[in-house]
Length: 162
Ligand code: SME
Image (tube, rainbow, N blue to C red; front, side, top):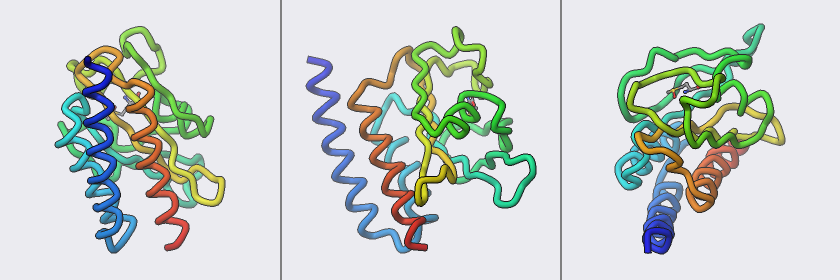
C-alpha cells in the first residue's frame, strides 16, 4: 500500500535526520544537510530550501538560505507575499495541494504542483521557514507534514542554543 510504503520511508529518513543532527556542528550545517537529505531521499521533494527572516530589516523579509533544486527567482520574499510570507506571518504550517488554485502562490518553476512551508521558531518567534515544492499534486500527506515539522523543530532548537 502506498501509505504504508510512504510511512516506512519517512521513518528511515527521520533516522537519517537524527544522525545528521547528531553530527552537525552548527545550525547552518544542519540546515544545509537537511536540504540534501530531504531532496535526495524523499523523491517527491523536488525543491527543498530554507528562507530566514532578515535581521533588523524594516519591513521584514525572508531571505533565501541553503537550498537544493533549481535556481529560484525568489531570493527575497516580503511577509505579505507568497505561501512563504503566509507561513511566516501566521506562524503556521501551510500545505497547498494544488498551487495553481492558490492565488498567494509565487511561481518558482512551471513544474511545481504542490508545496509545504513550515515555520522555524526560536523561543516562540518565527525566525525562518523550511519550504518544499513537489512536481506532484497533493504530495504532502500528514506523515510528510510531521517529518518536515520535525526537521524545522530541530533547526529551531539548534538556533536557540547558538
Ligand atoms: N512558492 C513560494 C516561493 C518560493 S519558491 O517555492 C522556491 C511562495 O509562494 O511563497
